[in-house]
Length: 579
Ligand code: PEP
Ligand code: MG
Image (cartoon, rainbow, N blue to C red):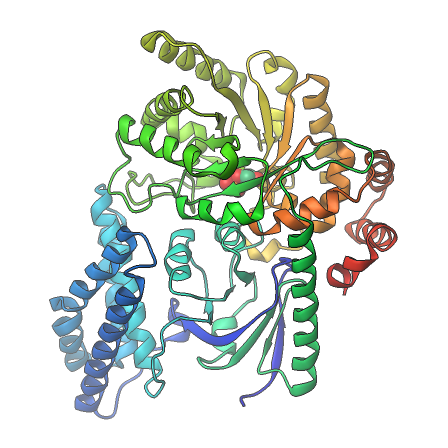
């Protein structure tokens, strides 16, 4: 057993997972140049790594054949062709001969040199090509750095990387990984959201973890504590196993109490518990989880395998597929594209922006690029047939809402149809909170996106791990602002749902109920737990609790009050949430 250690990141409330570390090398800090003593030997090592990487790709491809959608299988078919390309098979070798430098460094630096051209291209297919080259190169580097490890694929591994895009994670998840640990990111970054929604264990924001852990180390990832243990000793391991068993028992308890009945508090206030989804394949998990709706279907990743944004007809068919595939014909809220910094598919034209998160993103990008009209049209047409609500992201001014209404009227008149859909906006830019009064008669519902609302309210980038402590959902100033925002919605008789990551955090549920949210839309795997918690709460008591919480000054004080509340109201799960 290797050296034992532990590392602290941020609590994610994801469950405990055990597995062997698999490191993805992405940064030059872990691959330094040096002159090799024996160049022919270095070339031999390179050739061996190429062969191993190719075998690995073929193995993954074969394992995906009946498990993942065809498009994902096809990506690995293409990787297989790519690894035989002149670049990998000859150019790298020639560069080693020329410079006398080590193969991992040459491969890493030549790849980066090459993909710059791809990254800057206007053509989406070319840009996608750059990502593909990086993927194959990472695989070869893995084998170069780990000469003697027998390759067993990613099944049951804990992936350790500097950063990952949400799309990379989707791809890895099909290969059976158990969890991820990243140096960058935070609980509200999109890669974390995808991890949560796929039921993976994950911890983000642990600096330099890729150089502190070796491939093959045993990793235990405890999302409730935000800690990862490397090669834990016997006593620690037994403790963690006990905790894992407790989690298993609670999961069973939540499952047993889960039913299709409308969730209400003990004093009969109905709270609709819905699911947040991001990819089509997730729908199949819903049957067992029994949500009462889909409160947020992010469409950014919906067409991830396509080479361009599909035509209106193909989009209509996809939205109808979604609304047909959900169990019990529950209503589905589909959000229009919210393309931004870490959610831009390769199909879109790359626009250099100094700060894309507060630049041309969401509805702003969609209007600018004209893709909005087509998607809106497709959603309106799909909603003529099935229960689909349309949600618009990143609204920040009345002009945008007026534009939405104008386009909506044009589409309805073009097809000579009645409005059957409900139209809602995300409340995720602080200015939109102060719009609610003025637009209440134009829209039907509000969905509170606290991931963005918090980053803009606190001026704290949700993806920046240097300021993870600032982005505390228990921050009283933010909770006061959120409470004010919900009251604006309720006062105007708009249906209010919350879909940011704080809605998936069991600690926050009593406060959200107390604020008066009519719906909580959360990560699919926490639905049974959230339903269980809500059905034990008294709305009247939650209101009083929330009022007390809003008077507090620090996140620490808020946390203590929540723990007291949990101990008093559901002691059986307090052990899991608090320790
Ligand atoms: C949010 O901002 O809270 C939200 C739900 O949207 P996204 O995470 O996709 O930005
Ligand atoms: Mg958002």
